[in-house]
Length: 177
Length: 196
Ligand SMILES: [Zn+2]
Figure 1 (cartoon, rainbow over the protein chains, first blue to last red):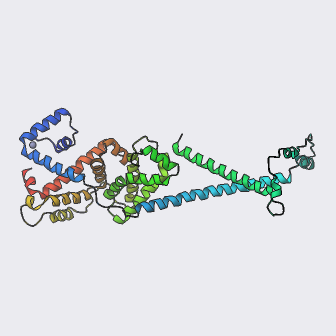
Figure 2: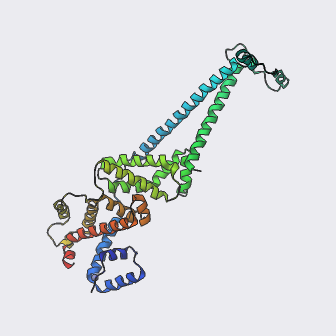
Figure 3: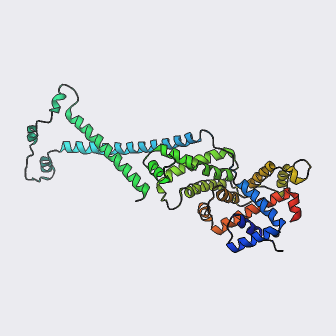
């Protein structure tokens, strides 16, 4: 009587034999106590292989991972702040340069001797929309002035926009669109 | 939250929801733990490796394309972290985990009980302990294969992807590992050895 190989017996327990071989092994097992014992010892091993290792991570495991991750995302916030600061600096520089040379006409006249056709923008017409409160009057007598407040708001908006842009870029690379 | 799909969970994590990552960690902690426990003997380093694995998962979540199951991807990261660790420590992945046959013999002797006939003296409990001890002595790669196959019911294809080995190799490691375990067990069950 030829015994099936151990590989065949393992495959039999795994349900990985083709129907003919399965039938062959099954018939053999009916008549062979030796192979039946082999099957039994394999079954015992299979049972043990299903037993979970009992070693566990420490109770602080989750908290430690989460702390490490939050620290990391804090790093990202710092990165964003750094970006915002940089942009803020550029913004201030641009503003101050523009303020210095608001009158492009005279600037160009000065450096290049070019004269542009003159057109005067008169912002006085805005005063006819009197639904806007006279903001500057609110700051009369204080050291704050309306222009400064407007500048602050613009800077804030710019920071928020940059933040959003970075976040958008981040999710896009993440989803790999 | 258990009815939330992995996809939803990952989207939530990528949107910055850290709670979602805690849930994700709960889902895959056992898988990562089993891989690490079976590959790394040093208990002090297991904790650090586990943290490293989840940190890596968090970082690379954005690159995951759902081309494979999340479990396969997670297992691969855990497996690679362990392989790197073992290589750094110059621990071989395919050699037996014991030095000499003698030492192994002593381990088996311990389970032989007190002089009664082997089959009776080795109680079910002892047999279980023996098999668990024998698993620990298998080569690292064999231990990984049997863990993924038997404990997590993964297919050859999945295991092959996780370990970066051909399916045929995975299959042969699996069959050889179980054969080794059986023969170790048979040595204790002297009666069985006598018949074969
Ligand atoms: Zn037989």
